[in-house]
Image (cartoon, rainbow, N blue to C red; front, side, top):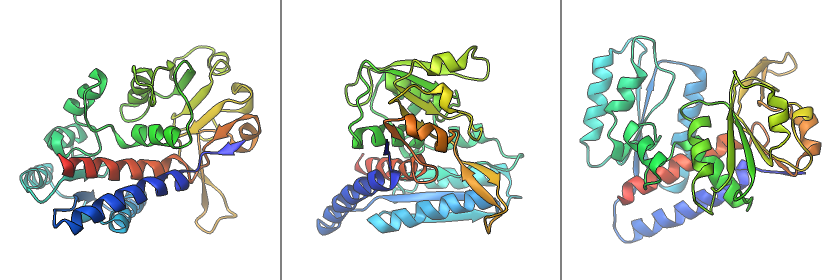
Length: 290
């Protein structure tokens, strides 16, 4: 069993981007600039945004963080996004979710310019992804593809089971892996969800299992065949009185019992989460180059 370490793969991606950005600076050219918007005081959102800003600084990407109270009106937030859309100094825009209930996430996504939508959520970018056109791929699916490529895990001809059909992970990932693309596609993909019957037997046929269902330890050892590759997208907070914080982070996979059966498996934390940030940085760089 070998760990698919997000730290190793993301470090390689960031080092490559750092060198490219350094070259831009030496040539007197503009470096990429990411604008992040954080609404409210959700601890998890705060952690994610601060981490993204920190990673930008590490590789030379400029970043601006705009903080707002959860009471900000939807109108004011959309006005700020439009202001950033029209700011030629800003290359990428991300709005951290979840948002307060009075703000429509759909309206926010539609307001961000597709050319600056480095999260890859805008319908235009999703449509381009489905059609196989150049576009921004949403960060978590893109990060998983980059992880597979870094560890040279081949997907052509493989049976892949994706558990979870969310718009930002499961569904786009199922499309990307089935695309006619030898770098990360040409797989036969089964997209499973809460209504799937006999999930265990379907998973046992998979060469690659990707768990993105948001339920801790959902994928158990009896669902995984020997030498399968397992990608765990889940990050679930589980009560743990032995931890100072009072909780531990657990994936959607029962790691302790599944890992011995695998050829490769991602840890949680230290796996897909780090790759999501690396993919966001990659998208921001591409936005600046366009």
